[in-house]
Image: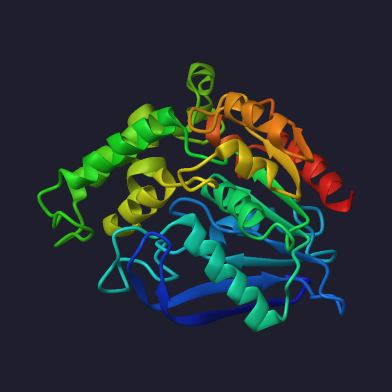
Amino acid sequence: MGWPVQEGVFALGDMALRKGGTLPGARIVWRAHGTLSPARDNVVVHPTSYGGQHPELEWLIGPDGILDPTRWFIVIPNMFGNGLSSSPSNTAPWPALVTAWDNVAAQRRLLAEVFGVERIHAVYGWSMGAQQAYHWAAACPDAVQRIVVNCGSARTSVHNRVFLKGMMAVLEAAPEYDGAALFSAQPAAALRAFGRLYAGWALSQDLYREGLHLTALKAPDLDTFLRTDWEERFARRAAADLLAQMRCWEAGDIADGGDLTAALRGIVARVLLMPSETDLYFRVADNAAELPHLRHGRLVPIPSIWGHRAGNPVANPADAAFLRREVRAFLEA
């Protein structure tokens, strides 16, 4: 890489959680790209997404990428539950629920205690990363100047929760599940079903109709695609980690069960809402309903048939170019 890269593990000690309980020996694995300016005013926080780890998100970082490390100091804090930071697979006992609020509180300490950063130029997030971006703006209104909500929402919708409850039920039905948080062994059959069900939600009906799962994603047939892109992808993660992060996803709510309109009106940051036109989780309509209550909001749907993955277009140059143009302009404005 032609720019500075740092990485580390930030220890938070035993961390009291928003919904009760404690995360023992909490830690965040992080990586940073670029150079922190002398004024500490060029920080972009890029939280990870569901099941994602920082190496899988770094494709969008580069001088010609969506996030330019020669202009911004980009800090990627791995979410709790992703297998690198504190997760059920590496931390015991695991609490009942670790929320986006808890992730943001820990990330704020990371920025302050490791880098001396109190104000954030932007938080950029996709999917659960977008949920964290929204929580950053709600939790720290005077510290965050702008957020990019890429395929995310301020509160997990009822329809989204229906999807999540179904997926969690697949894991919880495994004979290896202990009834609380952990598994006696990786539930291979449950994870296979989990991956195949997920494939029907993450990509749109239009993408499958066009056959892009075979042409753009280079699979010889549907069964190979389901195995290599979905079954094997989730088999690389501990089932307990996947379950814990889904519980966090379902609990996403910047109003914390209260008045969502008031919570949205309390956001001072400029907000770029970028849903995919064909996302089955975080619908354009969800962001459109949020927009009137934001002080400084802009809605720019991604014109794509790639469903939820339009927001993470590793294999999709057209959507990547769209994101690059819109995000770069927003960060510089």
